[in-house]
Structure formats: C-alpha cells, structure tokens
Image (cartoon, rainbow, N blue to C red):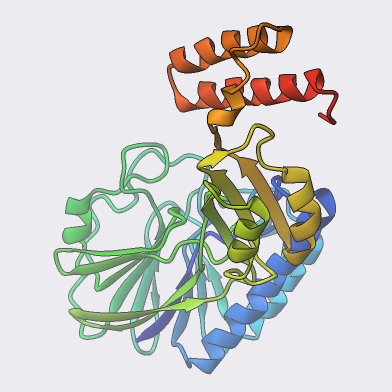
Length: 357
C-alpha cells in the first residue's frame, strides 16, 4: 500500500513574525499548499492520504479555508483520512463539523481507535476530542494479524505530557507496519519492534523555529517492510545564517550571503565577529538587501574591536564614559550583557561625537 503522510498544516496560522500584509498573504499561500498536496497524491498514485492532526491552527477558521480544503481534498483520487490533534480537536464546535466533506474524506471523531478497511490495506486512527489528551490513545492496542499492510494515523507525543503521550513499548506491541504520526514539526523516522514510525514534520515553516525544507512523506508499506521518500511541498523556507564580519566589510559579507538563498525565502542574518566602533549599519543593509527577499531580518551580534575602547585613556568626558563601560564589559557575566554594554558604548560615542544615533 502506498500512502502520502502529512501533518501539522496549521491552516490559518497568524504568522505573527511577519508584517500584517505579508502574514495575510502567507495564510493564502498555505491554502495553495493543499493544491500541491492533491497534485502529489494523484501523480504518485497513492492508495490513501493520511493527515495526522493539527490540520487547522485553532477553532477559528476562515470559511474560505474550509471550503478550499473540502474542495481540494475531494480532487484526490483516493481515500483521505484525518486524525484531529490538539490544535483542532473533534468536538461540537470543531471546524471538522462546519463543512460537508466529500465522500473520499474520513475524519476520525473518537478518542477510541477505529478501523477503516481499504482495498490494499487497513488504516486505524483516533482523534483528540479536547485540546489535551493526557492518556495514551495507543495503550492496550494490538492490531489483529492480517495479510495486508496495517497503518495507524495518530497525533501523538513520545514524551510524557498532555498531548497523547504514547510509549515506545506500546508502539512495539501494536502489530502495526507503519505509524503515521503528527505533532512534532521536524521530520523524523524510527523503528520500534516491527513498527516503522514517522513524523513528516510540518509542510510549510511558520517561523524561525521551523527551518529549512518542509513537506510530506511518501511511504510504500508492506507487511514487515517500509520505504519512505521525502517530498518537499513548501513555497518558502525559513533560514538563519551567521555572517562573520571580522576584518570584512559587512555589505560585502551580506552580498555573499544573499547569493546563497532564493529571493522567495525568509532569512535572518546574524552578524558576528568583531566590528568597528559604529557596529553594523543594519538600517543601511536592510534598505539595500530587504527587497531581494520575501522577508529579511538582520541582527548585530558583533563584539567591539579594540578601537571601541581606544579613547578610554583620554582625560575627557568621553574617556571617563568609555572607562566606566569597559569595566562593566569586562565584568559582564554573559555574552548578552556584553552585547548590551557594547551597544551602549557605541550609542554614547555617537551622541558625544554628534553623529546620527
């Protein structure tokens, strides 16, 4: 049985890290992600699509999103099975109750595991029915012997906590061939006993804690054997890169970084190393390079070179100011405090020299 395994779409996420107009645009782009999912399922001729929870980011869902989702899933030429998670639990006010699903879509609606028989395999599943599920939904489950693949779709955590904490021993005893999981936004595969387990990760990053290529997993499942392939689906990638400017012009360093990433990406650049007394001109670099990316964030993490304190020996207000801050800098307990003191020194020197702060 060939399945397409996705999870954690978080449709209608607020995208709080972006300006309002771009956040709105990203929500629209997240709906477009569904078209790529449907096209992939049909092109790869899968037997089933399994979506392991958190399809929605919360209970408040735009009507346009619901209608787009139902219409697009209906275009998939195979069954689609959904196991609601902690962000989109199945209950009386659930988004899953607010739309007429096409005939090929099955939403698991109970915290008890149920079974869906397909031509080439069996798919089990269960649902969060509240935002927290403190007991394992997999506890005590063992699939009866079968001569075709047995798969379960489940939103779950491997750690103790309120999000369906399943134990490795329960997985090993489940008798499943493939456990299609959701909840963890980083791609991960592992095996417990005879069961192959997978988190596909989220299909589209929503912040700088969800970096790199994102997508879904294609799995060919046989009794006792599984092969998977990662399929990228995301339109934009979040990336964080450090740029050491020691002995280099920050603009040249930024140019070198910019050449490494597509224009549609969302990029955060951390300038490190030693810089001069003025620090890195973030505003100037933002003006020059910001238009080259969908969204660009720049941060100055440089430490001051020796020239920042070079006038500390002067018998002047400037020298007194620098000597006091240099003592604080040398006594600082961590790098964050040193950065704060160095910035204060740079701003103070700019003010004393009559430069634009």
